[in-house]
Length: 477
Image: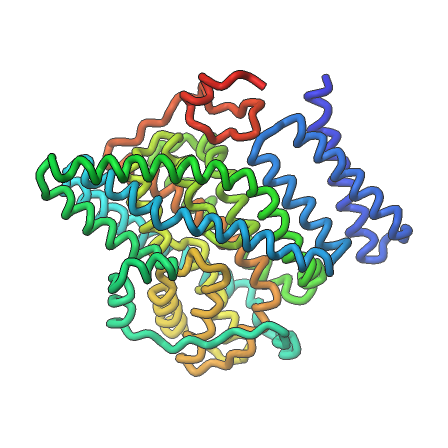
C-alpha cells in the first residue's frame, strides 16, 4: 500500500503547493509567505521521499529540477551562485563528446568495412533530416502568423543587462567550408560536432581500406575507447541531478517566474507550435516506422530532462546514444546519425528560428510577405547548422541574420528575457527528434531490432543505465 500511496501523495502535495503559490501571486488569496514556503517545502519533502523509494536516476533528475526551481524562487541570490555546478556538469559532458563520436564511428564503419552501406545510411539520414526540418519550419511560420505575438510589443522590454555580440552574415562558401576541419584538435577544442563527424568518417573509410593486420589494432583501441567513454558517462551521470538542479535554480534565480507575464504570448506560441510538431510530425513518423512509442519515450526521458534543464543538446548526447542502442538501434547507426543530426536535424531550433524571425519583424512593425519570410527562415536554417551543442547560440545566429535583412535588433533583445525558457523547449525537441531519427534510419536500413521489455524495467539500483549483463551479475540492493 505504501508503494502505491506515495506517488499519489507526492502529486497532490506538489499540485497543492503550486496552486496556492499561483493564487497568491495573482492576489486571489492572501496567505503569509511563511505558510506558502512551508507548504512548498513539505511537498518537496514528500517528493524526495518518493525519490528515495524509486532510486532511479531519471526520477532524481526530474526531482532536482523541482528542487532547483524552488531554490531559485526562494533564494535567488544563492541560486545564481549555483551556476558553477551546472557549468561543471557541462564541462564534464563535453569531455566525452569527441572521443565517443570518434570511437563509435570508426568501429561502426571500419569494423564492418561495408562502405556502400555507410553511403546508403548517409543519404537516407540527410533526406529524413531535410523533410522533417522543413515541416518544422512551416509549422513555426504558421504559428507566429496566427498568434501575431510580436504586434504591439513594448520597446522597453528590449532592455537587458546581458549582451550578445552580433555575428557577421555568412556566405554560402563559408557555410560549406565550416563543415570541413582544418585541424582536428581545434575542432575538438571548439566543440565542432559536424567537423568531428567528417574527420571520423574519413578516418574510418581510410582505415577500412588497409589490411586486416594493420586495421585490427586501431579497431581494438577504438572499441576499448568507446566502451570506456560509455562507462565514463555512467560515472558523470551520478552528478547529473546536481548539475541539472543547479541549472534550473540559476535560471529561476536570475529571471524569476514573473518574466512569463511580459512575453507570455510568444512563449506560449512556441510551446504550442512544438506540441503540434510532435503530434503531427514526430508521432506519425514513429508510428510509420513502427517504433515502440511507449518504450521510446521511456528511453529518451533521461536525455530530454538533461537537455531541458541545461539547454544544451550536447549535454544529452552520450546518454541519448546509449539509450537508443539499448532500444535496439545498432551502435554504428546511432554513432553516425545522431551526431550528424545535431547539425542537420535541429527540429526545435528550426521551428524557433522561423517563429522568432517573423516575431522580430512584427515587433518592429515591418510587414513581410510570405516570400520574404521564407527567404529569411531558409537563410536561418542554413546558418544554424552545428549550433545544437551551444546554449543560446541560435539567438546569436538570429541577431546576425535579422541585421543582414535590415531589421532592427532590439526585438531580439526582447526575446533574450525569455530565451532560456524557450531554449529549454526547443533543445528538448532537438534531442527527441535526433533520437527518433536513429530509429527511423535503422528501420529504413532493416536493422532496427527493438529489445524485449524484460530487463528494461528500472531496478532498485540508482544507476539504471548499466548494461543488461551487468544487471544480471549485480547483487540486488
